[in-house]
Length: 398
Image (cartoon, rainbow, N blue to C red; front, side, top):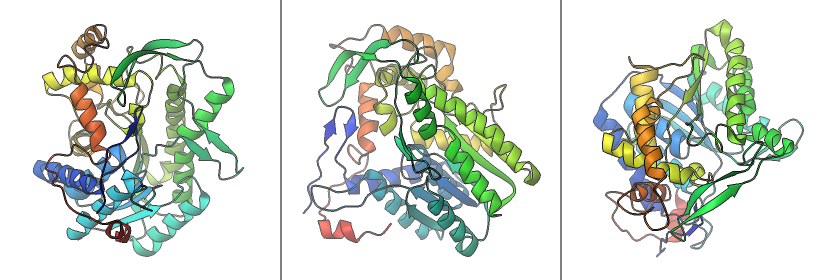
């Protein structure tokens, strides 16, 4: 029988519990079902659908709005008891199994979303097996590298400051330590490469390919998740390479809006709140911001996990009656995080943290660590230990 062990290197999760991941998907489905049904598009393509925001979006739209979904991701299945594959692989399988029980279409594509070939394969599926058109396209791809489909050149992203180094506190979940870190400024090449990977270029390529193939409905909506943050994390996020990539998404949204004008389509940037993801866990200084922010928001009753946040975005804002837009037309569900009192109390708390108290009741370290563990199938609510063989895991179909 396979033994599941949580393995963390720094703030990177290496081990997975496939059965725990399935239970976490079930928990998120139950959350959506308990909120009741809502009206939203019924044919949805989600690019980056296997974890965090993408998975939560897919669960909300399927089990809240009854949507058929296509999910695209780049994941790996199990090879041995020592190499069980990636969390997203099992998330895809669990979602598909539960969606099909509801009579929904849940097509999983496991491929390189950046390639022209992948775009064409998805387009062919939409035309031949998915009713011909989609009315919502969600772009939620998170990757540290991208190969340009036209030039073949591969770019790597860099999470760095711009202009001057940034010095601040960080935590190491593996060693359970609190330390001071220096984030070096990026070179012009690193800024350029980060925008190529994490900016909006591929989003625009997807929308052009889908439009040219005539698989978008009249009035189609496409969303892309962004994050702006606050003055507390601006030096290393909004003012760094990540901020440049997010600004590029704003520019590409304008291009897509022009592209979709003749079919009354719309590109919408959704400025999301701070949540625990595999990506956010490795952003320098960000975990410290989270354990402070979560403590304050949890006390106020405004802290959200990805499924809570995404369900609110689609149920109450995009397809509901309570949207909040800024002057640039971006949806702003991050208003709870940006609340002035919340930010002031978060700043005050963070300033008091040190190696002796960062993981105490003074902070929300316990919440952050649990949510981080849930991403790999550990510390999952309602989970019950079961025996499973590697052969049974290999036999699962995505």
